[in-house]
Image 1 (cartoon, one colour):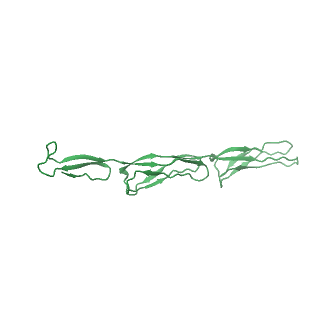
Image 2 (cartoon, helix red, strand yellow):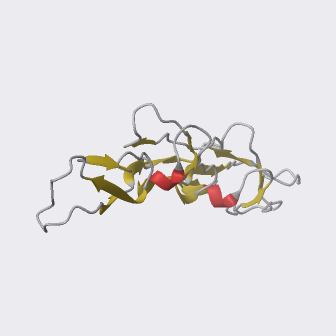
Image 3 (cartoon, one colour):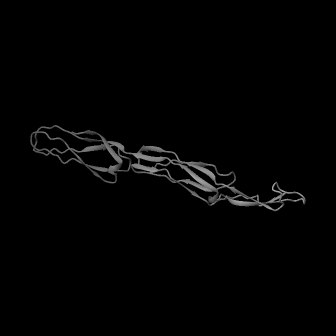
Length: 193
């Protein structure tokens, strides 16, 4: 017999034609007509995996490269891990596939195992200064410091309490967030003068 239509590459449903080549031969059903046999090629699975990662806020983007398995040898596409996060929060570690190579999207099914990128609040500490002096009719006004800010970021530490006469007052504070974002920080230590 002779088979035609039995060679294909891409996903799909096909029909092969089987013809008896020698006269006098018959199929098991006692016929000699051309037989049409349906067959198919199913999609191949590509497994895409991106990792999870986390860190404290540092002003830099958090990324983590992923990868894939299952692409037929010799076929190509462009894979890019696109997940990124800079400020506090969580995002899916996403990706893109661009079908710009020899691989055809219709031949594949994508299965995903995607991680999460998480940025946590950076810990900072606040200290306001204290001082003791003998009464001199001059207002006593002391400042303070914020420790732990990311380089290049700033806040203004306001210490509005002052004292002129004999006595004492706590050197309380408020913070004005300049180019630093309050949502990226957590105050874990306070020393009040």
